[in-house]
Length: 254
Image (cartoon, rainbow, N blue to C red; front, side):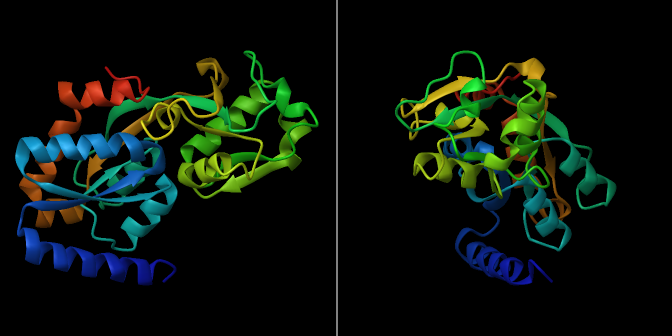
């Protein structure tokens, strides 16, 4: 029942969309770290196919809960493999998920006087009293953030400074508005046209956290209602063009 009203809203959106677009429209649930890359992906996809794409942004955990409650999403683009695998196991997805990209974690600040020099030690200083992190219970990048702090052996010293956002989108808002001194986010955010060149950031070494393998899956709703359109976007996501876009946003693609 927690997501009932949200689901009803999206059902209404889908009904209205069908009236306008017929079968040439899909709705994709997208993990917040992919938000900016998704803007370019859906634009390019529409150019190639004429199919319109609506996007719902949230943490992977939140979106998974909504899908399990019956939210009418056609495709799920997650920040990890765990959540899409759980949907496939629960028969909410029609096939096993596939990795479309590997994400990278960064520490980012908009505050003057704070800089990073290959270490996270600045987070221990009195200059930093609040550090934004995505909720590790629902956001894979939150898990990676905690892992990186523990790897650097500073987690126990700064855990009282942590401010949790429900998704990377919330963390970005905290950082960009200077509500916090620094925060952990996706490299794709600082590579986005909107945020590029703003503030200072440092990429976290990849051996500091488990690989962020991000998965995509066609959902049962999409298979039943927009099978061809959903399959076309799914295939597009693994095309050379989509890989080029994802790479430009700092993702690792094969």
